[in-house]
Structures are given as C-alpha cells and as structure tokens.
Length: 358
Image (cartoon, rainbow, N blue to C red):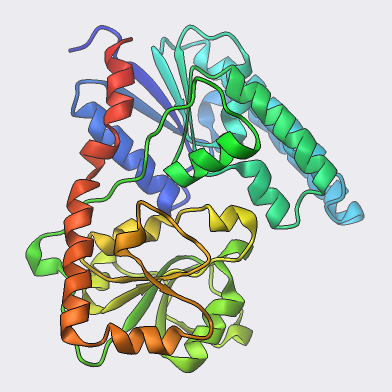
C-alpha cells in the first residue's frame, strides 16, 4: 500500500464520455494501490457532505434562473464566474475535513478550487477548452470570451499539472490561450474488444451514430442531411427534435451494438475549435474494428490513418468505395490494431508517472 495514496476525483458523471474517463482513471489508479474517492458534482446541490450549505447553493441557482428568465441569458459570463467561485468556496469546506494527497479535477466548473493553496497535488484534466466551447455555441460574446480566458489562465497557472483529453485540444490551448510549463498530455483511451465482438463486413453496410445529441457542435443539420441520402441508426440522447427526421433509437442497451454495423459516423460543426477537436466515440468505434466516417474539415494526425474522410457532397461516394470487401477489411484491421495501442493502461501512464513521484 502506498503512503501517499488518497486521491479525490472531482467528477462530471454525465452518463457519456466524461463518466467513462473517470471510471477508467479510477480503475487504473486502484490497480496501482491508490485509494480513490469520486465526488460527482453534476448535481452540486445534492452533495450530502455540504450540509445546510446546500440550501445556500440552491438559493443562488434560483436567483440566477430568475435573472435568466428576465434577461434571456444576458451577462452569462458573470453567471459562470459566480458559479465557479461558489463551488470552490463550498468544495473547500468538504476537502478541509479530509486528508487527500492529490485532487484530480475532471469538471472545469470545480476548477476555481485550485486557485487556493492546498495540501495536495492539483491535477486539472479538462475535457476541452471551455471558453471556446461557450463562445462557438453563442453563449459568450467575444469580449466575454477574452475575459473568461484570462480568468481560466489564472486557474491553469495555479494548477500543478494541466491536461486535456486529446492532444489536439492541448495544441489548440497552447496556440490560442495558455502555454505554461505545467501542461502535460493525457490522451483518451479505449478497451479493444474480443475478436468475437469485432464488426464484420456486410455487402449492404449499415451506419451507426452513437453519442451525445444535445450540443450545437454535434451538427444535427448535417446528421439530418446525411440521413436523407443514407439510412443511419442514431443512438444517444437527449432525444432530438422530430423535425430533423432522424432514425432515432434511444439509448443503446450496450456499446456492443456497434459490432452489428459497418461504419461509425461522426458529425461536427465547422468552427475553429471543432476543426481542432476530438470525439471520444472515434476510439469507441475503433475498439470494435469499426471504420469511422469523419468530416474532412477535422484533420487529426493521430487519427488520420483510421479515419474515412467525407463531406456533404461525397458522402455516398465514400461509402461506395469502402463497401468493397477488400477496402473495408483493410480499414477495419487498421482500426482494430490502432485501438490496441491506445488501451487506457497506456494512455493513462503519464498520470501514473506523476503520482509515483508524490
């Protein structure tokens, strides 16, 4: 048993990719003898250890909701800052009663906690650059975006180690907002499936879209357009508006449903962030040896060899090309072999190396 072995993970357990990463971090570190406490902060006001302070948090949220009803989300920037500061204030009350050697923050909304001097190593593991997420989804004006980046940079600077979920995000942040020496790389991973769960060739290929459907970046108009020219089974949530005409099948009973398809689909918007972004479903598809259709406006050197690039105009031509058995099988084998190199135990090694020195 390690001496410095108590780790707190501040988690955003949304039932999608963020939950998956936390589960894999927990499994990986517990396998190395660490004692992991996961604090789910999605429903912050329901954290029992806050005691009566929960009502203070609820009161603030009610005030903000009333403000947004009246002002229609004007001054949203100030809502975020206030929320982050209140959460940090309340989290301090929780961790002051504990003796953690390391705190891993997976929820950017909790990251203002790291402004404080803590008796624990601080690791901020961000899903994506949040300021850009909000700006490109029209939740921040450009001036608010710049101010929010300054606010975030202060958090980044006061963090012992800063990581993002994929190297493209890391590069994007280095180029556009923060290039500190505390940046490390902890990429996404996957769990390659057994041979009997691999996707198989079918001369009449089926396409699956599996994932979150609620964000503007998902590009439902594109998914709708593609669905009109080729049938696509759509799994995930929340349920999309019927106006998109999608073949929506709800939540998949298991990711193993992927093995019944011949192509996995990714759709994204064309803004600057998404051109440099990452979809965790890409690696999930790869883990089944499923060839991945991804928009050609996102170029990723790490994923280039295991991506089938398409656009709105050549979608059917691309499917036709890779519907030939030889082409499909070659790509499937590439995907499956690459997945074996990106197992979680490998991609999380940088995290393990950091903790070994504590």
